[in-house]
Amino acid sequence: MNTIIKKERLSEQVLRYRIRSPKIAAKRKAGQFIILRADEDGERIPLTIANANPSEGWIEIIFQIAGHGTKDLAALNEGSKVPDIAGPLGRPTHIAKYGRCICIGGGVGVAPLFPIVKALKESDNDVTVVIGARSEKLIILEEDMKLFSNHLHIATDDGSRGTHGFVSDVFNTLWDKGERYDFAVVIGPPVMMKVTSTLTVKQGIKTFVSLNPIMIDGTGMCGGCRVTVFGETKFGCVDGPEFDASGIDWDEMIRRLGAYRDFEHNYTHTHQCKILEQETPRSKK
Image 1 (cartoon, rainbow, N blue to C red):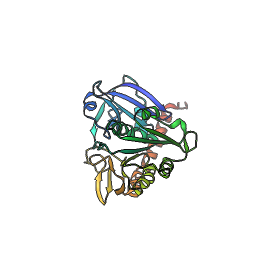
Image 2 (image 1 turned 30 degrees about the vertical axis):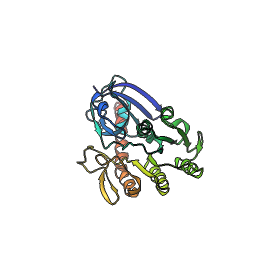
Image 3 (image 1 turned 90 degrees about the vertical axis):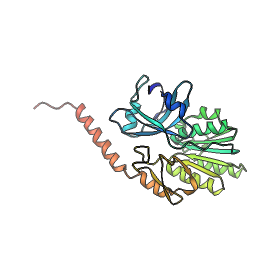
Image 4 (image 1 turned 120 degrees about the vertical axis):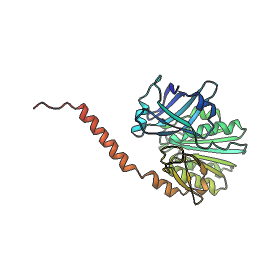
């Protein structure tokens, strides 16, 4: 149970794990997530269930190595057991036959976008996918997206692949060409979601985003993941993670995401210093 059966590196800092977890695989729906710990003393890491196979009993997660917890997770190998996995958590995406859908993902946000794209396509929607990254080598899930999209567009900040620019630029180009959509999903870094969803909402497209607020317990008890939507306090773990983009207080959410930045920096610096002290032999007096 909870055994890593496949480990794959999608880019320099992004990994995909296939984990045997039959109970979660049987119940999971698009848009839901898990919270796991790489070891019994590790931090709790919320990650979207990027794919699942109920008959074979596995789920897939995709994560970017960013902090201490994800570094510990990346150190696990095939055959390793993940000691704690809670899920599926959160409200699933409301999947319906909307018509023409546009799904826009940036960076590692392409990972949680994929199960939604798959579910929308399987519900007989016409699906346009736009994925972006800083450069070509950081693009993930391109081949997976091709399988479940009618049209796929790529943007890179440095112009090394596809459109030279941002995913928002691709949307503007498509709209200017006369493309119209009935439903949109935008997932990625907070500023990217704010900018891009502002464009889609302005054009009258019903738009949902998957938020990534600071999350601890995943049950609504701690309040760490609270966000303001249409003037009301909501919790990302139990009311989300998806919300109507037109009602989000983006500035508040972005500000709250930076609340522990100094603490994380200091913790990482202290941890690295301790490692250096342990590895550096003391001179004999």
